Image: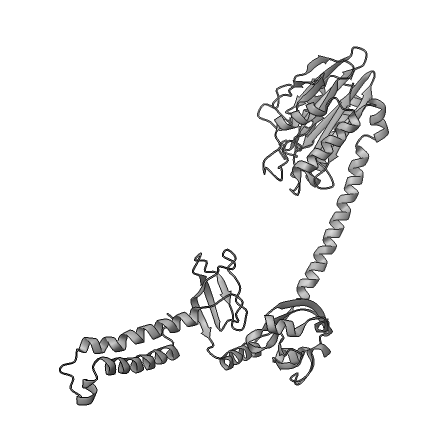
Length: 488
Protein backbone atom coordinates (compact mmCIF):
# COMPACT_ATOMS: atom_id res chain seq x y z
CA UNK A 1 0.00 0.00 0.00
CA UNK A 2 2.99 2.35 0.50
CA UNK A 3 3.83 2.06 -3.18
CA UNK A 4 0.19 2.45 -4.27
CA UNK A 5 -0.28 5.71 -2.35
CA UNK A 6 3.05 7.25 -3.32
CA UNK A 7 2.51 10.50 -5.33
CA UNK A 8 4.87 9.47 -8.13
CA UNK A 9 2.99 6.19 -8.60
CA UNK A 10 -0.44 7.89 -8.60
CA UNK A 11 0.61 10.60 -11.09
CA UNK A 12 2.05 8.05 -13.45
CA UNK A 13 -1.12 5.95 -13.27
CA UNK A 14 -3.34 8.99 -13.97
CA UNK A 15 -1.26 10.03 -16.98
CA UNK A 16 -1.36 6.53 -18.43
CA UNK A 17 -5.13 6.27 -17.80
CA UNK A 18 -5.87 9.58 -19.56
CA UNK A 19 -3.73 8.73 -22.56
CA UNK A 20 -5.02 5.18 -22.99
CA UNK A 21 -8.64 6.26 -22.28
CA UNK A 22 -8.59 8.93 -24.98
CA UNK A 23 -7.09 6.52 -27.52
CA UNK A 24 -9.64 3.79 -26.76
CA UNK A 25 -12.57 6.21 -27.03
CA UNK A 26 -11.24 7.58 -30.34
CA UNK A 27 -11.10 4.07 -31.70
CA UNK A 28 -14.48 2.86 -30.40
CA UNK A 29 -16.58 6.08 -30.41
CA UNK A 30 -14.84 8.71 -32.63
CA UNK A 31 -18.10 10.65 -33.10
CA UNK A 32 -18.27 11.98 -29.59
CA UNK A 33 -15.03 13.93 -30.04
CA UNK A 34 -16.10 15.31 -33.47
CA UNK A 35 -19.64 16.35 -32.59
CA UNK A 36 -18.99 16.72 -28.85
CA UNK A 37 -22.28 14.90 -28.43
CA UNK A 38 -22.24 12.65 -25.38
CA UNK A 39 -25.96 11.84 -25.17
CA UNK A 40 -25.53 8.70 -27.30
CA UNK A 41 -22.33 7.61 -25.64
CA UNK A 42 -22.28 5.07 -22.83
CA UNK A 43 -21.08 6.75 -19.66
CA UNK A 44 -20.15 3.35 -18.25
CA UNK A 45 -17.97 2.50 -21.25
CA UNK A 46 -16.24 5.86 -21.12
CA UNK A 47 -15.63 5.40 -17.38
CA UNK A 48 -14.20 1.92 -17.93
CA UNK A 49 -11.86 3.12 -20.66
CA UNK A 50 -10.22 5.38 -18.07
CA UNK A 51 -10.52 3.37 -14.85
CA UNK A 52 -9.18 0.10 -16.28
CA UNK A 53 -5.90 1.62 -17.61
CA UNK A 54 -5.54 3.49 -14.31
CA UNK A 55 -5.84 0.24 -12.33
CA UNK A 56 -3.52 -1.67 -14.63
CA UNK A 57 -0.90 1.08 -14.52
CA UNK A 58 -1.10 1.35 -10.75
CA UNK A 59 -0.81 -2.41 -10.36
CA UNK A 60 2.16 -2.62 -12.74
CA UNK A 61 3.89 0.20 -10.84
CA UNK A 62 3.44 -1.67 -7.59
CA UNK A 63 4.76 -4.86 -9.16
CA UNK A 64 7.75 -3.14 -10.72
CA UNK A 65 8.58 -1.49 -7.40
CA UNK A 66 8.10 -4.68 -5.43
CA UNK A 67 9.90 -7.03 -7.78
CA UNK A 68 13.02 -7.20 -5.60
CA UNK A 69 15.26 -9.96 -6.85
CA UNK A 70 18.17 -11.46 -4.87
CA UNK A 71 21.51 -10.03 -5.94
CA UNK A 72 20.14 -6.65 -7.07
CA UNK A 73 20.84 -3.43 -5.23
CA UNK A 74 17.88 -2.41 -3.09
CA UNK A 75 16.20 0.91 -3.71
CA UNK A 76 14.05 0.32 -0.66
CA UNK A 77 14.55 0.50 3.06
CA UNK A 78 11.93 -2.11 3.87
CA UNK A 79 10.81 -5.30 5.54
CA UNK A 80 10.53 -7.97 2.86
CA UNK A 81 8.22 -10.95 2.61
CA UNK A 82 9.01 -14.05 0.59
CA UNK A 83 5.89 -14.84 -1.41
CA UNK A 84 6.97 -18.45 -1.72
CA UNK A 85 7.25 -19.38 2.00
CA UNK A 86 5.66 -16.27 3.61
CA UNK A 87 8.81 -15.56 5.66
CA UNK A 88 8.64 -11.86 6.65
CA UNK A 89 11.55 -11.06 8.98
CA UNK A 90 14.04 -9.97 6.28
CA UNK A 91 15.15 -6.31 6.48
CA UNK A 92 16.89 -4.71 3.49
CA UNK A 93 18.43 -1.21 3.42
CA UNK A 94 18.94 1.29 0.63
CA UNK A 95 21.98 0.47 -1.48
CA UNK A 96 22.44 -3.01 -0.06
CA UNK A 97 22.41 -6.14 -2.25
CA UNK A 98 19.20 -8.08 -1.74
CA UNK A 99 19.85 -11.53 -0.27
CA UNK A 100 18.04 -14.84 -0.68
CA UNK A 101 15.39 -16.23 1.62
CA UNK A 102 17.13 -18.66 4.04
CA UNK A 103 14.52 -21.30 3.27
CA UNK A 104 13.78 -20.83 -0.44
CA UNK A 105 17.32 -19.95 -1.60
CA UNK A 106 17.32 -19.53 -5.41
CA UNK A 107 13.52 -19.77 -5.54
CA UNK A 108 13.09 -16.61 -3.45
CA UNK A 109 10.27 -14.26 -4.49
CA UNK A 110 10.49 -11.10 -2.36
CA UNK A 111 7.81 -8.46 -2.04
CA UNK A 112 7.84 -5.48 0.36
CA UNK A 113 5.79 -6.07 3.51
CA UNK A 114 6.56 -2.64 4.96
CA UNK A 115 8.40 0.24 3.25
CA UNK A 116 10.24 2.88 5.27
CA UNK A 117 11.84 4.82 2.40
CA UNK A 118 12.10 4.51 -1.37
CA UNK A 119 14.57 5.73 -4.01
CA UNK A 120 13.36 5.61 -7.65
CA UNK A 121 16.47 6.89 -9.43
CA UNK A 122 20.23 6.61 -8.99
CA UNK A 123 20.31 10.24 -7.90
CA UNK A 124 17.70 9.61 -5.23
CA UNK A 125 19.62 6.54 -4.09
CA UNK A 126 22.86 8.50 -3.83
CA UNK A 127 21.10 11.31 -1.98
CA UNK A 128 19.57 8.84 0.52
CA UNK A 129 22.90 7.10 1.05
CA UNK A 130 24.70 10.41 1.54
CA UNK A 131 22.14 11.51 4.10
CA UNK A 132 22.47 8.17 5.87
CA UNK A 133 26.27 8.45 5.87
CA UNK A 134 26.35 12.03 7.12
CA UNK A 135 24.48 11.29 10.33
CA UNK A 136 26.01 7.87 10.91
CA UNK A 137 28.27 7.83 14.03
CA UNK A 138 30.58 5.29 12.34
CA UNK A 139 33.01 6.03 9.46
CA UNK A 140 31.58 5.51 5.95
CA UNK A 141 33.26 5.92 2.55
CA UNK A 142 32.21 5.56 -1.07
CA UNK A 143 35.09 4.66 -3.36
CA UNK A 144 35.50 3.86 -7.04
CA UNK A 145 37.07 0.79 -8.65
CA UNK A 146 40.59 2.19 -8.06
CA UNK A 147 40.05 3.07 -4.41
CA UNK A 148 39.61 6.81 -4.95
CA UNK A 149 37.31 8.24 -2.29
CA UNK A 150 34.19 9.68 -3.93
CA UNK A 151 32.62 10.70 -0.65
CA UNK A 152 33.11 10.30 3.09
CA UNK A 153 31.09 11.24 6.14
CA UNK A 154 32.35 13.59 8.89
CA UNK A 155 33.18 10.67 11.18
CA UNK A 156 35.60 9.31 8.55
CA UNK A 157 37.38 12.66 8.23
CA UNK A 158 37.57 12.93 12.02
CA UNK A 159 39.01 9.42 12.33
CA UNK A 160 41.70 10.02 9.68
CA UNK A 161 42.33 13.64 10.77
CA UNK A 162 41.55 15.04 7.31
CA UNK A 163 39.49 18.10 6.39
CA UNK A 164 38.40 16.43 3.17
CA UNK A 165 38.94 12.90 1.92
CA UNK A 166 37.37 13.31 -1.53
CA UNK A 167 39.84 12.51 -4.31
CA UNK A 168 42.33 10.72 -2.06
CA UNK A 169 43.03 7.00 -2.22
CA UNK A 170 41.62 4.93 0.59
CA UNK A 171 44.69 2.66 0.42
CA UNK A 172 46.78 5.51 1.87
CA UNK A 173 44.79 5.30 5.10
CA UNK A 174 43.77 1.64 5.12
CA UNK A 175 46.64 -0.38 3.53
CA UNK A 176 44.68 -3.63 3.88
CA UNK A 177 42.51 -2.49 0.95
CA UNK A 178 45.51 -3.18 -1.34
CA UNK A 179 44.81 -6.90 -0.93
CA UNK A 180 41.23 -6.55 -2.22
CA UNK A 181 40.19 -6.84 -5.88
CA UNK A 182 38.14 -3.64 -6.00
CA UNK A 183 36.98 -3.88 -9.67
CA UNK A 184 35.61 -7.38 -8.99
CA UNK A 185 33.74 -6.14 -5.89
CA UNK A 186 32.23 -3.20 -7.78
CA UNK A 187 31.19 -5.30 -10.76
CA UNK A 188 29.73 -8.32 -8.95
CA UNK A 189 28.51 -6.81 -5.67
CA UNK A 190 30.82 -8.99 -3.58
CA UNK A 191 31.62 -8.27 0.07
CA UNK A 192 34.96 -8.29 1.87
CA UNK A 193 35.71 -7.50 5.50
CA UNK A 194 38.73 -7.21 7.76
CA UNK A 195 39.84 -5.71 11.10
CA UNK A 196 42.38 -2.87 11.28
CA UNK A 197 43.79 -0.64 14.01
CA UNK A 198 43.45 3.12 13.54
CA UNK A 199 44.20 5.90 16.03
CA UNK A 200 44.43 3.42 18.88
CA UNK A 201 41.09 1.81 18.10
CA UNK A 202 40.06 -1.42 16.37
CA UNK A 203 37.68 -1.15 13.43
CA UNK A 204 35.87 -3.81 11.45
CA UNK A 205 35.67 -2.56 7.85
CA UNK A 206 33.21 -4.05 5.37
CA UNK A 207 33.67 -3.35 1.64
CA UNK A 208 30.42 -3.85 -0.27
CA UNK A 209 30.31 -3.60 -4.05
CA UNK A 210 27.34 -1.70 -5.55
CA UNK A 211 27.14 -2.66 -9.26
CA UNK A 212 24.33 -0.23 -10.10
CA UNK A 213 26.58 2.68 -9.02
CA UNK A 214 29.82 1.05 -10.21
CA UNK A 215 31.33 1.83 -6.83
CA UNK A 216 32.09 0.34 -3.44
CA UNK A 217 30.75 1.31 -0.04
CA UNK A 218 33.12 1.01 2.92
CA UNK A 219 31.41 0.64 6.30
CA UNK A 220 33.49 1.00 9.47
CA UNK A 221 32.47 -0.22 12.89
CA UNK A 222 34.40 0.56 16.05
CA UNK A 223 34.86 -2.80 17.79
CA UNK A 224 37.54 -1.73 20.30
CA UNK A 225 35.44 -2.67 23.32
CA UNK A 226 34.48 -5.98 21.73
CA UNK A 227 38.15 -6.81 21.04
CA UNK A 228 39.08 -5.89 24.62
CA UNK A 229 36.26 -8.03 25.97
CA UNK A 230 37.33 -10.94 23.75
CA UNK A 231 40.92 -10.67 24.96
CA UNK A 232 39.75 -10.55 28.57
CA UNK A 233 37.50 -13.57 28.09
CA UNK A 234 40.29 -15.43 26.27
CA UNK A 235 42.71 -14.72 29.12
CA UNK A 236 40.18 -15.85 31.70
CA UNK A 237 39.47 -18.99 29.68
CA UNK A 238 43.20 -19.76 29.51
CA UNK A 239 43.52 -19.31 33.26
CA UNK A 240 40.51 -21.56 33.91
CA UNK A 241 41.84 -24.14 31.46
CA UNK A 242 45.22 -24.05 33.15
CA UNK A 243 43.55 -24.55 36.55
CA UNK A 244 41.51 -27.48 35.23
CA UNK A 245 44.63 -29.13 33.79
CA UNK A 246 46.33 -28.72 37.15
CA UNK A 247 43.25 -30.20 38.84
CA UNK A 248 43.53 -33.17 36.47
CA UNK A 249 47.14 -33.74 37.53
CA UNK A 250 45.97 -33.81 41.14
CA UNK A 251 43.11 -36.18 40.33
CA UNK A 252 45.41 -38.38 38.24
CA UNK A 253 47.82 -38.61 41.17
CA UNK A 254 44.99 -39.96 43.35
CA UNK A 255 44.15 -42.73 40.89
CA UNK A 256 46.09 -46.01 41.23
CA UNK A 257 49.56 -45.97 39.69
CA UNK A 258 49.95 -48.01 36.50
CA UNK A 259 52.60 -50.25 38.06
CA UNK A 260 50.34 -51.00 41.04
CA UNK A 261 47.45 -52.01 38.78
CA UNK A 262 49.76 -54.27 36.72
CA UNK A 263 51.08 -55.98 39.86
CA UNK A 264 47.59 -56.66 41.23
CA UNK A 265 45.92 -57.49 37.92
CA UNK A 266 48.59 -58.57 35.39
CA UNK A 267 45.92 -59.12 32.75
CA UNK A 268 43.69 -56.06 32.55
CA UNK A 269 42.64 -53.09 30.44
CA UNK A 270 41.23 -49.69 31.40
CA UNK A 271 39.34 -47.61 28.84
CA UNK A 272 39.14 -44.20 30.51
CA UNK A 273 37.79 -41.20 28.59
CA UNK A 274 36.87 -38.12 30.69
CA UNK A 275 34.49 -35.76 28.97
CA UNK A 276 36.02 -32.49 30.26
CA UNK A 277 39.67 -33.14 31.23
CA UNK A 278 38.81 -33.88 34.87
CA UNK A 279 36.34 -36.66 35.45
CA UNK A 280 33.46 -37.74 37.65
CA UNK A 281 34.32 -41.38 36.90
CA UNK A 282 37.15 -43.03 38.82
CA UNK A 283 38.65 -46.45 39.47
CA UNK A 284 40.29 -47.80 42.62
CA UNK A 285 42.58 -50.85 42.80
CA UNK A 286 44.51 -52.32 45.72
CA UNK A 287 45.29 -55.45 47.72
CA UNK A 288 44.46 -56.30 51.35
CA UNK A 289 45.87 -59.60 52.68
CA UNK A 290 45.17 -62.16 49.93
CA UNK A 291 42.26 -60.17 48.51
CA UNK A 292 42.50 -58.23 45.26
CA UNK A 293 40.00 -55.38 45.11
CA UNK A 294 38.72 -53.33 42.16
CA UNK A 295 36.21 -50.48 42.19
CA UNK A 296 34.68 -48.54 39.29
CA UNK A 297 32.50 -45.55 40.21
CA UNK A 298 30.45 -42.89 38.45
CA UNK A 299 29.94 -39.72 40.52
CA UNK A 300 27.04 -37.34 39.98
CA UNK A 301 27.88 -34.92 37.18
CA UNK A 302 31.09 -34.60 35.21
CA UNK A 303 33.87 -32.05 34.95
CA UNK A 304 34.91 -30.16 38.07
CA UNK A 305 31.87 -31.03 40.29
CA UNK A 306 32.20 -34.72 39.45
CA UNK A 307 35.97 -34.58 40.01
CA UNK A 308 35.55 -33.21 43.56
CA UNK A 309 33.10 -35.99 44.35
CA UNK A 310 35.44 -38.62 42.88
CA UNK A 311 38.35 -37.41 45.02
CA UNK A 312 36.13 -37.64 48.08
CA UNK A 313 35.17 -41.19 47.07
CA UNK A 314 38.82 -42.22 46.62
CA UNK A 315 39.75 -40.80 50.04
CA UNK A 316 36.87 -42.62 51.77
CA UNK A 317 37.76 -45.95 50.08
CA UNK A 318 41.37 -45.56 51.24
CA UNK A 319 40.13 -45.00 54.77
CA UNK A 320 37.57 -47.85 54.84
CA UNK A 321 39.57 -50.53 53.02
CA UNK A 322 43.25 -49.77 53.57
CA UNK A 323 43.14 -48.30 57.05
CA UNK A 324 40.23 -50.24 58.57
CA UNK A 325 40.89 -53.44 56.55
CA UNK A 326 37.22 -54.05 55.73
CA UNK A 327 37.02 -56.57 52.88
CA UNK A 328 33.30 -57.40 52.67
CA UNK A 329 31.80 -55.56 49.66
CA UNK A 330 28.41 -54.90 51.26
CA UNK A 331 29.97 -53.47 54.43
CA UNK A 332 32.32 -51.28 52.37
CA UNK A 333 29.37 -49.80 50.47
CA UNK A 334 27.35 -49.26 53.66
CA UNK A 335 30.22 -47.40 55.32
CA UNK A 336 30.99 -45.47 52.16
CA UNK A 337 27.39 -44.25 51.97
CA UNK A 338 27.15 -43.24 55.62
CA UNK A 339 30.46 -41.37 55.58
CA UNK A 340 29.70 -39.63 52.30
CA UNK A 341 26.35 -38.41 53.67
CA UNK A 342 28.10 -37.28 56.85
CA UNK A 343 30.68 -35.35 54.80
CA UNK A 344 27.91 -33.57 52.88
CA UNK A 345 25.95 -32.52 55.97
CA UNK A 346 25.80 -28.86 56.97
CA UNK A 347 25.93 -27.31 60.44
CA UNK A 348 22.13 -27.77 60.83
CA UNK A 349 22.63 -31.53 60.39
CA UNK A 350 20.93 -31.62 56.99
CA UNK A 351 22.46 -33.04 53.83
CA UNK A 352 23.44 -30.06 51.72
CA UNK A 353 23.38 -31.81 48.35
CA UNK A 354 21.81 -34.96 46.95
CA UNK A 355 24.92 -35.88 44.98
CA UNK A 356 26.50 -39.29 45.23
CA UNK A 357 27.82 -42.07 43.05
CA UNK A 358 26.93 -45.31 41.29
CA UNK A 359 29.53 -47.97 41.91
CA UNK A 360 30.54 -51.59 41.35
CA UNK A 361 33.03 -53.28 43.69
CA UNK A 362 34.57 -56.72 43.32
CA UNK A 363 36.86 -58.55 45.75
CA UNK A 364 38.76 -61.62 44.51
CA UNK A 365 39.89 -64.28 47.01
CA UNK A 366 42.91 -65.92 45.35
CA UNK A 367 42.99 -68.82 47.83
CA UNK A 368 39.34 -69.84 47.42
CA UNK A 369 39.16 -68.78 43.72
CA UNK A 370 35.96 -66.88 44.42
CA UNK A 371 34.76 -63.33 44.07
CA UNK A 372 32.31 -61.31 46.09
CA UNK A 373 30.49 -58.38 44.53
CA UNK A 374 28.33 -55.47 45.62
CA UNK A 375 26.97 -52.70 43.45
CA UNK A 376 25.13 -49.42 43.76
CA UNK A 377 23.05 -49.53 40.55
CA UNK A 378 26.06 -50.72 38.52
CA UNK A 379 26.39 -54.46 37.69
CA UNK A 380 29.35 -56.79 37.13
CA UNK A 381 29.74 -58.76 33.87
CA UNK A 382 31.52 -62.13 33.94
CA UNK A 383 32.46 -63.72 30.58
CA UNK A 384 33.20 -67.42 30.45
CA UNK A 385 33.40 -69.59 27.31
CA UNK A 386 31.58 -67.00 25.17
CA UNK A 387 28.79 -66.70 27.74
CA UNK A 388 27.78 -63.66 29.80
CA UNK A 389 26.90 -63.89 33.49
CA UNK A 390 25.53 -60.69 34.99
CA UNK A 391 25.62 -59.94 38.72
CA UNK A 392 23.28 -57.01 39.31
CA UNK A 393 23.82 -54.30 41.88
CA UNK A 394 21.24 -52.92 44.32
CA UNK A 395 18.83 -50.31 42.95
CA UNK A 396 20.12 -47.47 45.11
CA UNK A 397 23.12 -45.12 44.93
CA UNK A 398 25.92 -44.25 47.31
CA UNK A 399 24.30 -41.06 48.56
CA UNK A 400 20.98 -39.56 49.59
CA UNK A 401 18.11 -41.95 48.79
CA UNK A 402 14.53 -42.61 49.85
CA UNK A 403 15.61 -45.74 51.72
CA UNK A 404 19.21 -44.84 52.44
CA UNK A 405 19.10 -46.88 55.63
CA UNK A 406 18.58 -50.11 53.64
CA UNK A 407 21.84 -52.11 53.70
CA UNK A 408 23.58 -53.15 50.50
CA UNK A 409 23.71 -56.82 49.58
CA UNK A 410 26.59 -58.87 48.18
CA UNK A 411 26.86 -61.79 45.77
CA UNK A 412 29.48 -64.53 45.48
CA UNK A 413 30.71 -66.43 42.44
CA UNK A 414 33.27 -69.18 41.85
CA UNK A 415 36.00 -68.32 39.37
CA UNK A 416 37.88 -70.29 36.73
CA UNK A 417 41.09 -69.51 34.90
CA UNK A 418 40.36 -67.49 31.78
CA UNK A 419 37.27 -65.76 33.17
CA UNK A 420 36.98 -62.11 32.11
CA UNK A 421 35.42 -59.57 34.51
CA UNK A 422 34.16 -56.19 33.27
CA UNK A 423 33.23 -53.24 35.50
CA UNK A 424 31.95 -50.04 33.89
CA UNK A 425 30.03 -46.78 34.21
CA UNK A 426 27.07 -45.82 32.04
CA UNK A 427 28.94 -43.33 29.82
CA UNK A 428 29.79 -45.91 27.12
CA UNK A 429 26.34 -47.37 26.59
CA UNK A 430 24.61 -43.98 26.82
CA UNK A 431 26.69 -42.36 24.08
CA UNK A 432 24.63 -41.06 21.11
CA UNK A 433 25.72 -42.49 17.74
CA UNK A 434 26.37 -40.18 14.80
CA UNK A 435 24.51 -42.31 12.24
CA UNK A 436 21.57 -43.49 14.36
CA UNK A 437 21.17 -40.45 16.66
CA UNK A 438 20.34 -42.96 19.41
CA UNK A 439 22.11 -44.32 22.48
CA UNK A 440 24.37 -47.34 22.05
CA UNK A 441 22.21 -49.28 24.59
CA UNK A 442 23.08 -52.03 27.06
CA UNK A 443 22.34 -54.77 24.51
CA UNK A 444 24.90 -53.52 21.97
CA UNK A 445 27.43 -52.91 24.72
CA UNK A 446 27.00 -56.50 25.93
CA UNK A 447 27.30 -57.81 22.35
CA UNK A 448 30.56 -55.88 21.87
CA UNK A 449 32.08 -57.23 25.11
CA UNK A 450 30.89 -60.78 24.39
CA UNK A 451 32.29 -60.68 20.86
CA UNK A 452 35.71 -59.51 22.10
CA UNK A 453 35.86 -61.54 25.35
CA UNK A 454 38.03 -64.27 23.79
CA UNK A 455 40.66 -61.74 22.65
CA UNK A 456 43.65 -60.77 24.75
CA UNK A 457 42.98 -57.87 27.11
CA UNK A 458 45.18 -55.61 24.95
CA UNK A 459 43.22 -56.41 21.79
CA UNK A 460 39.90 -56.12 23.62
CA UNK A 461 40.91 -52.62 24.78
CA UNK A 462 41.74 -51.71 21.16
CA UNK A 463 38.33 -52.95 19.97
CA UNK A 464 36.47 -51.13 22.76
CA UNK A 465 38.36 -47.91 22.01
CA UNK A 466 37.85 -48.14 18.23
CA UNK A 467 34.17 -49.03 18.45
CA UNK A 468 33.43 -46.06 20.74
CA UNK A 469 35.03 -43.56 18.35
CA UNK A 470 33.35 -45.16 15.36
CA UNK A 471 29.93 -45.09 17.05
CA UNK A 472 30.26 -41.54 18.37
CA UNK A 473 31.60 -40.13 15.10
CA UNK A 474 31.49 -36.33 15.14
CA UNK A 475 28.92 -36.25 17.96
CA UNK A 476 29.85 -34.64 21.24
CA UNK A 477 30.84 -37.01 24.04
CA UNK A 478 27.95 -36.83 26.50
CA UNK A 479 29.50 -38.20 29.69
CA UNK A 480 32.66 -39.53 31.24
CA UNK A 481 33.42 -43.07 30.07
CA UNK A 482 35.15 -45.83 32.07
CA UNK A 483 35.39 -49.56 31.31
CA UNK A 484 37.72 -51.90 33.23
CA UNK A 485 38.43 -55.48 32.11
CA UNK A 486 40.17 -58.02 34.35
CA UNK A 487 41.40 -61.45 33.26
CA UNK A 488 41.51 -64.20 35.90
